[in-house]
Image (cartoon, rainbow, N blue to C red; front, side, top):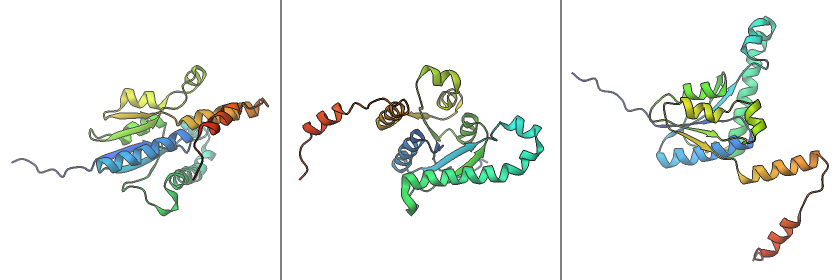
Length: 188
């Protein structure tokens, strides 16, 4: 006799950190969840500030775990509010706060073949790749479900350039803004 199995609901799992790139991925994940009739599972991962090994070596830090979890939960709720507003109008699903390194935690969460895992593609510079491991690369290499790496918003690159120029106290080139405004049709 064959065993009857309840079909699982399709899920769209998305890594959220609160960064502009992760907010872009969250918006895309919500669109994917709606179009597929799937649940949206935003996931924020966290680790002890000096890593789990340091937390185990210093027992006093164990008392901070509930506070770190609360801060992670607050960051996730803040990201959800930033994207969906205070109305709670996001697709059905479940928001999770998971302790662990981002890549492995996301892969463990998106553990079904019919899941879709979305991650922000993040920075592409050589220095960034050398210093920080890529969550999107880890997920692409290890996930058992399809993975969609969402590129950063073009606005994010422009804002980073402006921030860098401001930090170095360099003059901003606004000439291209004047040229673009001159070619735009007047508002009615």
